[in-house]
Image 1 (cartoon, rainbow, N blue to C red):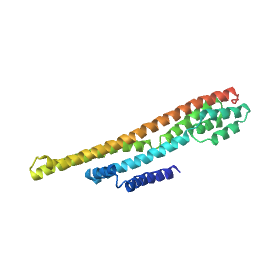
Image 2 (tube, rainbow, N blue to C red):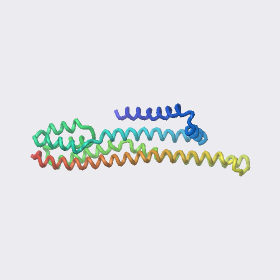
Image 3 (spheres, helix red, strand yellow):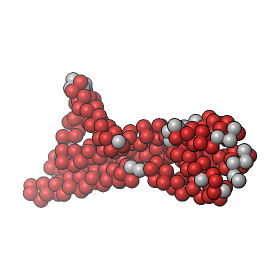
Image 4 (cartoon, rainbow, N blue to C red):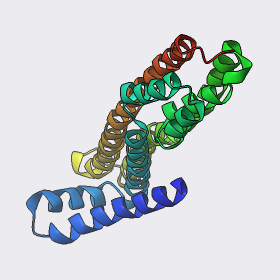
Length: 237
């Protein structure tokens, strides 16, 4: 399901770029970007653009998934408490099953082990919490990879542009600015593009990490609160 969502997002991002290109043909800003893209050398500029598209697709998928995973933990714990006060552990488990997000899944695992004592509940919560952490961080490694690759590709284009500039000097035996300007321009354009892509993806990456940290904190607080609720309602026997 998540793979299907990611593929759809990737094609959506690509479609957005294509739509922007279609409707902005007369726009001066787009024409400038188009010219700079061509001047920078389509080989490396295309690779940097692919990093941006794939990186944004991963970022959008993570943001959507994390927003779905964010649950009102206070309301969830309140409903669990109501069921446990009436001695309905199965009802509390059903509340967790019907609620989306990693917090509800962890609380469900804790409730499932209520008859084994508080230590078993805490152990189940910790073990399943590690699993949920892995799911929350899924895809981050790819975003980090594109953040690292984009400027590297830009620097590679820079090196190649400088090599071309020196090749022209060698071929013409002339150090005039007109001879080397083209190669240096290509070098600078690829570097700037790679750095811009890395900056954009880094902003999204930091937002996603902060979102995950917030969810993890809620998970930990809810886990502690669940054990207290179960103890206060004499669930452990």
